[in-house]
Length: 76
Image 1 (cartoon, rainbow, N blue to C red):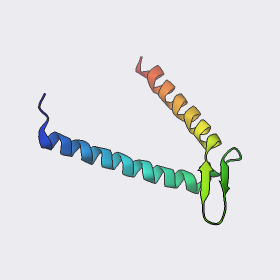
Image 2: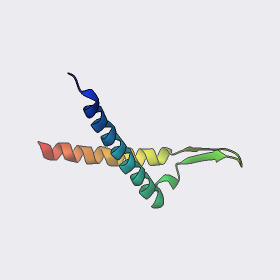
Image 3: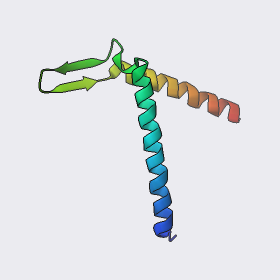
Image 4: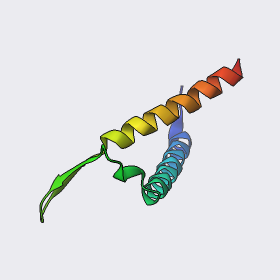
């Protein structure tokens, strides 16, 4: 299969749009407090900071699992 530069360009545009939508989603979820849950760890000092969003990742995993399960259930 010869895709050529046209197909590669379309793929790059699609990937860019997906990344932009994902960025907006993360900003909106952060604004409602998703990434400040009690199980999220944050370490640091004045010059550096490490943030490990354990609880937020678990919550997002549960939500995405339920959404994908529902999609699969109604496709049958």
